[in-house]
Each structure stands twice: as C-alpha cells, then as structure tokens.
Length: 91
Image (cartoon, rainbow, N blue to C red; front, side, top):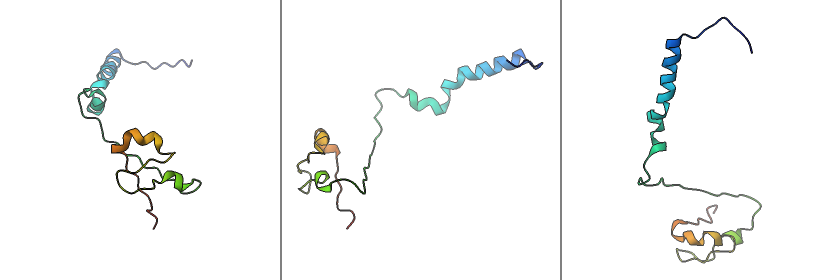
C-alpha cells in the first residue's frame, strides 16, 4: 500500500456516496426495471453460411407456408408460425 499525505474531505466523501446510492435510479437504468406485463421486445436472427454446408439439407423442398421441415430444420418445427426460410437469394 502506498501511503500519501492526501486526504479526502468528509463532505466530498458523503456527496460521492449519495451519488452511488442514486445510481440505480438513473433514466438509463429504467428499462432494466420494466414491469413483467410489458410487451417483450421483437427479436430477429439471420443465419448466413456461405461455404461448407449441404444446402439440400437446409432448404425445404416445398414453397410456401406448408413446407415440410428438413432433417436439420426439424428443431424449429414448433416455431413454424415464427420461422421464415429465405433461399435462392443468389440468383
């Protein structure tokens, strides 16, 4: 420990502690305390794999909303209404 002859006035220390106590109430922190009834945020994910996969396993055979999920896409079948498969975007 380095001993210096500097000291922090008691009043400055108390002002600083008041700031620390008030930090969770800053406007920037409000989204973290939103009530549970609030609508959850909409999220979006994109997967792009240019090389190294077998595209026939990733691409559904049928076109439209009633396509059959391929072997690799089977885990997403429960989310059918939320999944949109885009393919042949390179041509």
